[in-house]
Image (cartoon, rainbow, N blue to C red):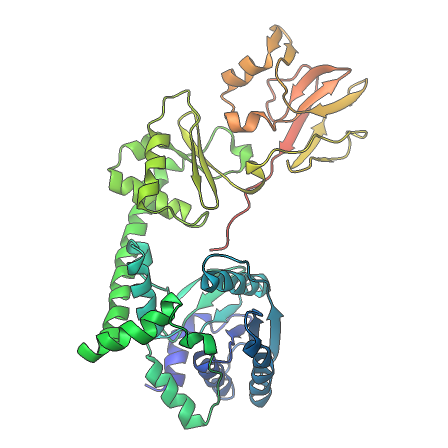
Length: 434
């Protein structure tokens, strides 16, 4: 099968996408991918094709690469966009550059568009080895998926079944020129060490090593799909609606999870947490056990890479972004007919007759009391306990005060001393790009 036929077969599900975008580094893989797609576009009805080159600014040699990519795109009649990104100074410069690159791609993708990456079978073999050396579980051993959601679109790797030799042969046949990144020869980087020092020795002993490693990643991916289906079934009951649906935060009921084995609990939680945070390593799972088995009145917190899992009652809640900071004091609310933006804490609205007197919004400080019809003056802390309001919500729950007296608690209609409803739309979690 020719490269063109291979691409048509693997990209068939996205033939109706509004656009195809090639992530063009200027290297062999992405250059071959762009050339082959541009050639196919002259023979078949395909979505509009364009390219994006991300300039990381990490080495002086890279300053010439945008011009090379521009020449290639001009020769093929493909529009090119050059994006400059800031790379955070992390311990792994490779990971930092990757984070910056994929964030740029995600921000640029329009609804339904397909981002095409030129990674191939040898890259998959390297990825598997690299992850195994880091003690990866099944999710890591499954390697790079052929396709996954990214931003408003989809990321696809249509070359994962082809070895680098096939791409090299194509490039030579069509007279294609490409960039050789000098950093790819630096074996101090983990992936380069595997590429130049480890894989050649494996292939000298087992010529099909790369193909077999990539095939193993495919088997792991198939097993992972089965575990994810099991996780979906196990999570179905745990996802039961919270009594505080207005919080709009991810949460799980703990009782159904306790009925599962330890391994199935971890499997279900990994599937649930995957879109929310980088997953914990093996040793860090002790935090889940502490949260799950805490006393009913406790409020343990399990910190994770991109947020925290917090227990309230017999439920675990995911908190990230604004929920991990203390909101600023509420501003004045001169016109109750208009919504009030609360800094770092969502939005507040009043529905009902405008109360007479000086109105202000406050957060709990302790000692507040609310006079309720037929119940007299009640301590707010006790009332919130009776309502089962999660402790992590209470410090940011808006309170309506008139002439110095508490008269209404947001979103708790039964805790109101006057006619009307105080509706609060809390902030949502900031979600990490996976």
